[in-house]
Image (cartoon, rainbow, N blue to C red; front, side):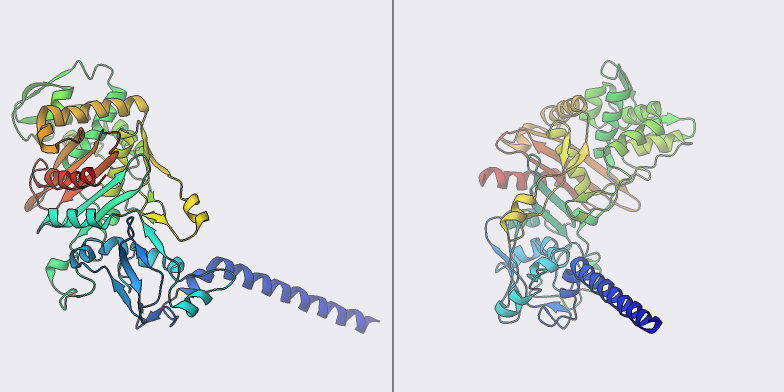
Length: 454
């Protein structure tokens, strides 16, 4: 009897262990199956460490950006389009970790939890992906940047659709340069600067400082500030880009007066400035849907007034991610609700199309957003000129970010107020000089493309 009971106990233990093992296996397959199936060791998908068989990647108009043919990955027919879309499409070896090829490799493989990659093995292609990107807009942006490196992105602030995203330097994936890894001109070529870049913002940061002033200084609109070319504190100076004389809050924004905004920053104090910046997404891990962004950073000096002044005008240790600032512009344009830019239009199935609802990544108080909107519109009307952004009803802010030992970076951020053109733009041109120059010109060319092709 004891022997029978003992044997029964052993059998029960084996059954329980078997069930537990099967459960662990099933759960592991459910959680990790897609990752395992799209591993580089899978020769149905990869050859020599690069993707050869996968679904087709299309732009928003149905232009093929990447496809599989005869056990080979082929790309867009136009070489400029290939260069302009490199970072959103990604390379086949996964060096561009934020590219569609890498981030959505399980989808492109056609993996399903029931059939694995059976469909891919049968047809040689997996699940197709449709991007929100307009490849011709990317081409326009690429050409507009000319010989400069940097990044530009445009999105629909009402829907979150990322319509244009270009990062430079880049290269033609069909004609890979032999010196890609050794030539200095390709430094950082695998980094998508829209998503992963981080830069000193210069005067575009005055938008954040202005928001803090609107919310914390009751009489900010009736104040005046004196600019004689420098703002002096007891521990240093903030140098202005001109001598503006007496200016009010709006004029200070129009002229991008460092003296006025440094004085405002010191009056607000580090704690309030940081609180506003963090409410707008700084020092926070943000995402553009599934894509992780590099954090924008704002840690103003709590002891030095001059460093606090510099931080408030976008210098010192202040750093911003372009895609994050695109959402900030979207929030202002959209009455306070800044959507996350979304690269993906659909992942092949109806349910996945329906499931891609816009997500909010930046929130601004509606009354603050309206006042910022008025200031940014005033910049264009009273400083830059509507002629520079013909027919766009543009709101915007330029930025000139000083770089130690080199020419300044040129920034422009803005959006169109036209109801039929709800687009926001961010542009950073490395060593491009003044923001009122190349960055605003590049931004205008790309938005004009959408106006003509609306």
